[in-house]
Image (cartoon, rainbow, N blue to C red):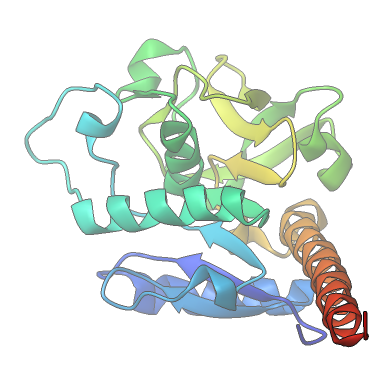
Length: 248
């Protein structure tokens, strides 16, 4: 690994050209370097030290037992890719940051469900803006709270769906004023945080930059551990080879 951990960023084939540069900027400012990852342009998990699952189209309801609706833009190839990326990241102990759709996908892969009409379900005030106008309250004792250093955050909102039933090993990290889940996180390693907002658009706020910084730090620590384990295994193989050459 170089001084800058490599972060794979999943994006839509339709809007990735527009979103990825902003993601790459946030990752660079946090100390990493980004690789664009999308269906038809896939990379190996061995090539990255961490993962961002980006925002975009709705997730196919068939993946969590939801109702298929007309007029909803879906991308089955991206659903497949991101499911495989998340599962592979867990297997390889790679940290994950899920953004909007990415937070929802993290939940779905772990067996959770989504509310397709979240603003109808909750009494939350409706926002649709890239500006930080919506307030969310961070749950006490969470990784999100430690990372951002805040008990409440001003965030943007570009979503109509939200996490409903939590997936395995996840907990709620933040809610809005109506009780709608706005952030989730994994309760054990590797680090996985999913936020319903888009921190890449509000990197001028320190608390949101810290989300990317936490991902980079976790990626750097994980790569260092992997290198140490690899070196120890190589030394063990070399020692075994030397013993095999000794005369009886």
